[in-house]
Image (cartoon, rainbow, N blue to C red; front, side, top):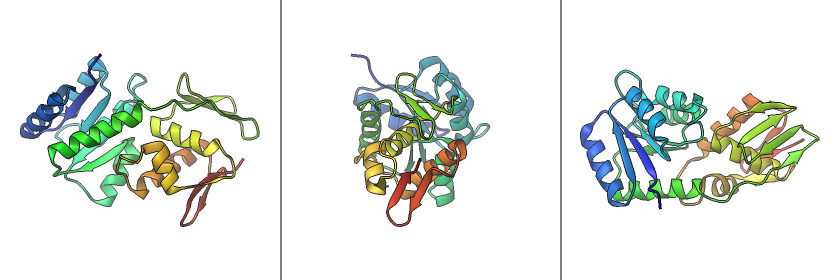
Length: 225
């Protein structure tokens, strides 16, 4: 059985050593880099299952590195989680805006971090989403290629945006609560906040238009054809 691969990118060697040791002890194959540019090179060479990124690094910071990963056709669906001491709301929102799947605040106990990593990877390896086609609003979701077509135009969405869109369009008009969205897209054992959903909805609106995504205040979201 092939080991799952984790890329750690942080400018503090002590953190790379500590986290790397604990992940390797759990059976992961670990690669490390102490800056964003080297991290990108390692990601393109090794195609990791998960990238753990620090935010504040010299040269190319974590946000820019995340965006570069998402712009690479071969890496756009890799799981990305920020692991950082920057825990302000605006930093978290910027992280999700850049394309991250999770945002983990330092300090964190190694055993807890390993559990978060396993939860992310377990969710990523879950059941595939079925193709849903809704001619009335011109959206086709192709699970084989993980792409979306809007009125014949192909859109390549990051994994979580893809899964969120597939969930909402699976039952047009139905209100999906925030709890339901989190459980189906991120999984019950992955800790993310409400802002995560809001950022992903905003990005879907930017790419597919505002008209179809409706906010039900205090409850959640729905897709209206």
